[in-house]
Length: 372
Image (cartoon, rainbow, N blue to C red; front, side):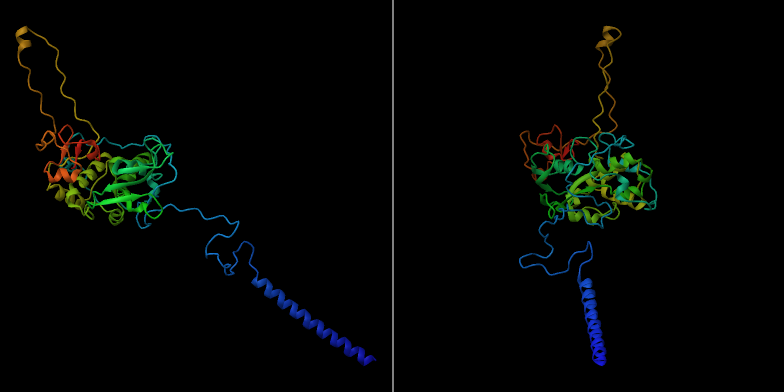
């Protein structure tokens, strides 16, 4: 009996030990396979559920607005869903734009020529909130520019005629028509180019501008153009020495605008940049620097004085203005041009305000000269 009890106790202990070991192994296995707190299960999705689709009760990921390629140093969000406000005072250019009818070559001659400053410290944020509503019209700068440069536009209801849903761009950089459609995968077809790139400006004087002045620079209509997206990305932060539009007929206007912007913000040019600009303007020496400055007022008539004979004497001819706008080409009185291509084909371009055939719709930068 004693031996039987001893054998029974030993047998029972061995069984208990094996059972305990198996239970431990099962516990370890279950613990290893169970997901950690906060982690996502790795099980295959149930039939009919797409991989990556949110499961019932899960919060879907927000829709991401299309952005410019990250390699672009001036990249900014496309088609923002809200209008960025701005609370900075003094958001304006440090200098006036060039005087009315100034020749671009004359303005280029007074731009300082220096080497590039280091790019150290540059980021898009140095020029403030992208597409800020600097003019306080309730609309972001990108949509302001799209409304200015596109035709046949459709506006989003309920946005106070602000948000552009679609339109047609007569692209100045490629001389092609581009259909714009707002959307995550389509907005990049039309981008807003900083004619003088932000990074280029940073290396040529903008580091010395105030925060408010850099904000103005990034949102100044003089420095903004709606253009072909791929061309804008190819330009990146190049200056006139490294990149010019493929549309050669637009290069004079493009370079003249760069000169006007740099003059307005007190920026300089490199020697290579200066020489490239001068070469382009050599084909159009009378090209004018675009400006919002109005024509200078004529001289005021002096009050009558002296004897009747002196009063009857013919008045002296007024002094000639400092700059004289070139005389427009003769155009038939009843001329009408559906677009600038028609005006150029008729040999009438450019069209000046007051000239037959001129229409504000053809004057994209509203400087009084259409189809430049």
